[in-house]
Image 1 (cartoon, rainbow, N blue to C red):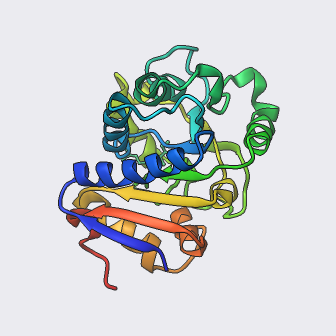
Image 2: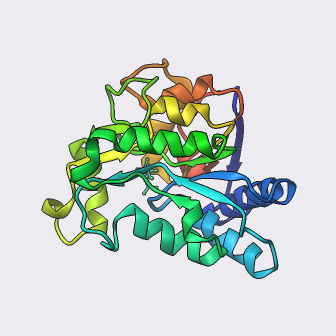
Length: 243
Ligand code: F6R
């Protein structure tokens, strides 16, 4: 059973999860963090920046992103490499060489997954992986139907995901169709997982992921099998849980 924490406000979740990350880093300065993009984890990154400003040293941390769009030009502000650089790396003083994002360059897709898996393995695996959940039930960009044991691979984004993420782009047509994502199997290898979700709109998928059958139809349902999962929700996102 995961540890489930329900907080009144996302900011509280940010503080709580940031404290967990800080404890990890203070215990082992070279910890390997798995970082997510999207809106949900921003409260955690904001709280971590406050810890950095208060003197916590993140300079030895290694960070691995969950995913990257395929085909955005290098330096595109919505590429996940740019987002992680802006939201995580710069604010915490992590050297750029210690931050890894899957390579979404179409020219290198054949082995992008393997290269990313090799980098994670070389770092000794992920200590703590932050996760959000998509409306489709995706974690990373593992959309419904994805294997629950897959490693980093190229995935076709569900149309719902493209629509949801079009808020970051000028038009829906600008949202890439493909991404390189850690597989569910990659995510499950992390020693500790923290899933965050906020708002009523996530309530139904959160309930299916945590209380429904474990199935490729809801890739996040695989999280039920992880031995060290913490779920942090606000009241809206928790509102359809039965247990
Ligand atoms: C982000 C990622 C996705 C998001 C999910 C939720 O790297 O892999 O699984 O966590 O799409 O996104 P938000 O937080 O924007 O609702």
